[in-house]
Image (tube, rainbow, N blue to C red; front, side, top):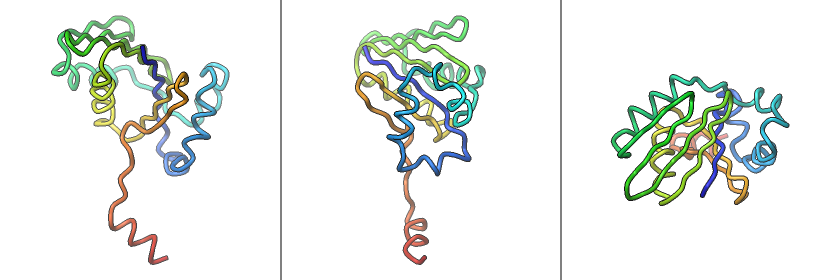
Length: 146
């Protein structure tokens, strides 16, 4: 079983964190309740309705069954496996059992709403943006001209 903790980074800190993801991982990898003030400072509070809409609108096509109760969701795909999602105030806890395509389905759905979602896998010591930043040619040209 794979466990993710997903945070929505505040827009004003997103560019600062780019390139410093490992430092953010070290902060978030500790029990989130331990660093709650830092998490509250860096991360937006999650809105239940926004996440609920993403799950029901974007993922209902990818899963055979979606059950929800009190900010918890169980998504079932007969071939790929199961995803369990638990909403917190600043963190989405995700447990995936089965194919890694489950993870991808969820990440694509969440990243369609915003590019500020950041995931942490404590056990594997991995982290990253759900929607990696793309540098446009214009950005590269602006940086080389300075």
